[in-house]
Image 1 (cartoon, rainbow, N blue to C red):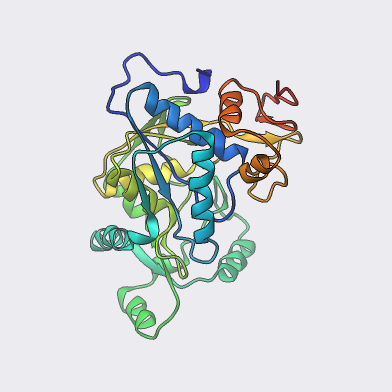
Image 2: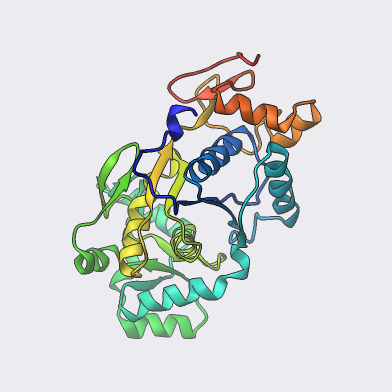
Length: 308
């Protein structure tokens, strides 16, 4: 087994992992890599590997891509022990949001993206987080009457987490990453993150912690590109009294220029590789052995054209 999924000798046998793609395009080699890592962590411990379709982005998700995800994983030789689809679970996310509202930890935000960009640009010292400038908190200071009046008038709005109030409630938090070790939560990593968008029934951050708890996930194996999101996820777990998984943020698959793969990457979707004559179990075996298709490899250690 490759080092990135080496199992500590004391890992419990009740391990549950998940692969949670969004159906916005066909899976590529980077998705295959992540799915294999999560699958193998569970199987090595005699545990369960679950599939979750994260389709709350109603403007981009397509049913045909959900079918494609299942087809691609089966082609690789992966079998899952259960599956949930987020669009069938909206009531659970609403309930979690209502819990946060009841604790005065969520507030309506009436700012558009343009409004936020304008305010950030006008600030000489706009705070920055892991993903760039943070929301400046414009609507946080609105009083209850003003909020209620705008909502009653039908003003479009999202719901945000009041990170200051949340931090005051929880105190210092941390999580354990099997690569990075113990990581202290940085409340400013994502700021007052969105919990429910204007055109999205639940944010990624809220849905993922609710679903990890519902599926009994004990070990979250996912890419390093969402490492910063775990600060927010750990905060939400504390506020909603949800269990805290162990995390493993693995390296990403990149092209020859060191750029992470995208779903639009030509020639590297699993469907395209299948059409080109690749066999799924062979590709899976190659990836497990650290052999990547021509032109791609792991970030920081390009593996180049070495398929045998």
